[in-house]
Length: 165
Image (cartoon, rainbow, N blue to C red):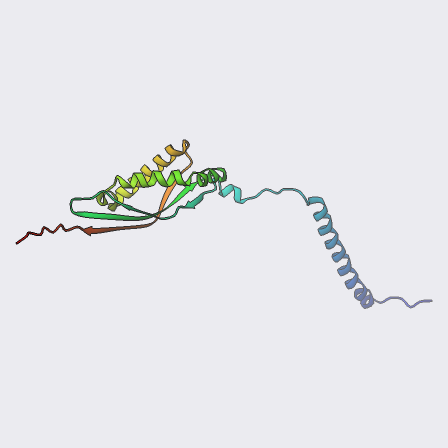
């Protein structure tokens, strides 16, 4: 007859057996979960926070002559980013970038350096550009305009009159 199993031998056998059972349950849960849930689309919590996806297009820089103030010539170097919400709008904006640049240049050519230099005037310029661009695109695609680079240079023009002696 076989010798009876003592309590310490039962513990030695039960620890590895419990570990094996836990591993089998864990692996089977992972495999079952993968098979049951593959191909399913889950709720994306970031959609709660990103109600509208803001996108921007950075336009190449503009260098224009501003309207002259008496004997001063002014040059403006400007870089603009256009903000829009929908990716479809981005394709429309990119296909009309030449029309947008033309609208911006024509708007800037009517400005003097004094029209641009003040902070309130910059806000007004941005609103005016946004309105004109949306009008040129026949839709409210542009939601905001960001000025990423702005330099104004003034040159004094002196007219010398030479008299013949």
